[in-house]
Image 1 (tube, rainbow, N blue to C red):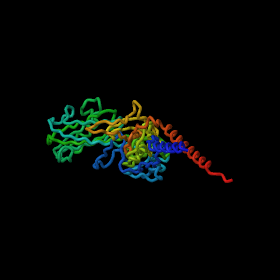
Image 2: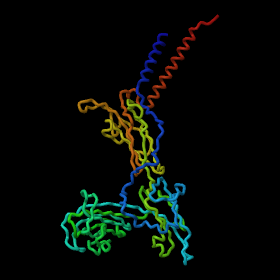
Image 3: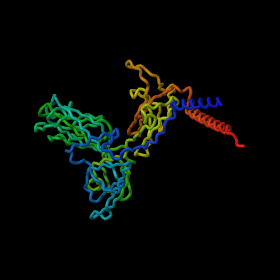
Image 4: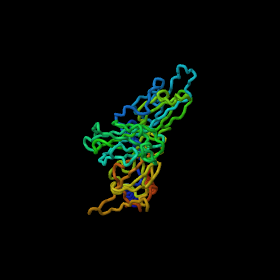
Length: 466
């Protein structure tokens, strides 16, 4: 009987000791993931396009012709076929337009028909440059001689339609401030494509801008792709002259031809970035009327199209619940959730570990999954839990997890809310996760056997009635 009592006491002691040991099984969190807010007041625009919109003094865009508007309509099909309105902000992830022309009726030409229709998205890019001319001033009008008093440069693509405006005068409060115009301030504007001599005859706008107007304005179509030179030739007035150049360009994206009087386009199939556009509906008759924008084009101006949204990511384990959580040192499961309104995109994750509370980080995994295993004893990826001396104090390594996500356009990251301790003291007893389960199961089996043995012993001692 004594050995049974001793065995029972020892079993409870062993079970109590094992219950106090740290278990390396990572908790699988079930926190619901909160999606990215659908409407955001400010969304990061996608490189390499940077949109600095034109000043309000530009009353109209060179391509915004609405002469044919009474015969055309453009609806936003992805918004219940609502009419498209200028200065709108439209959210995708699939902004779809439907453009339709009324039947064509031209007096005296009953056989004139609309053969094809297309929707185009005119990409607007505006830039502002400024500087100061301090001299020397080249006396008189010298259109075919260098140097000019000032130069500016801009990169353009072949076929881009360009509007350029140069304002000049005296800075009111230093360079970049407002300009005061004077009647004696005169400047000529020249624009040269790459690789040509800088003469009056070679200028793309020289013939139209050698005037006394302020601002000077010129338009042209870029003949080649490259860096264009803007020359400012100043020859009267105050030699300390401030100048500001506005460069407005656009190019048409999309424009697939649809038979008949209607065209439908999903902008996500055409545009791979968020941006500001003029939306143009064109009709094609196969006659010279197609060259007249007032007849063939209908444009709705200044439309922000946002099809692409940043993803988000949330670290789930470890380190999300308890600041003093202890894990390891066997392979630790790190898990997270990620989402993107653009559900057809593949999210790429990188996982980082820090053992100094975020001062330094080490990447341990690249994956498209929502979980990974980290072995802290790995010679390459390991960050051993070894205390170190810093600033005269002993620091105990406490770990953080950071998960970064990208959809190829935008980036986001999340760090575990709480640090956690990697403890290796009981590795020689417990080993990996399977060993923990085996120890627990064996302990419970021993307890069951002890209980059964104890009950049977009690039964044998009960005297039988005669």
